[in-house]
Length: 117
Image 1 (tube, rainbow, N blue to C red):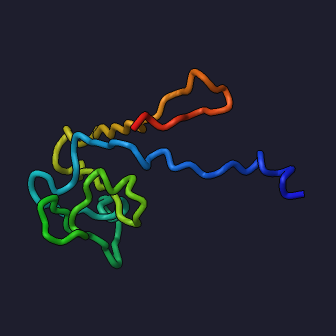
Image 2: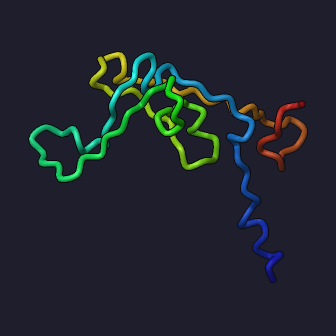
């Protein structure tokens, strides 16, 4: 009975496992900065327990570094963009992900195939 549902639940595929990721900006680069949760810097809003942290791309402390590679590394860490308070150039940040996969011309049953190693 389980075999009749096998096609409905395909194997999970992590497309990012071989990916190359980059961004044109990251928090704390070139200088350390403080970032807060989005709602904590809304003008005229009372904050009971603000949660702000330091971001420093060159820090010895892992918790202060948030490079773009953390967006796909499978951990509970994250990439952090620069704060928009640092200037208009940070209102738009570009993230590029190259999944290193392509369509297979030889098989219609395979949507994605890994690159030749």
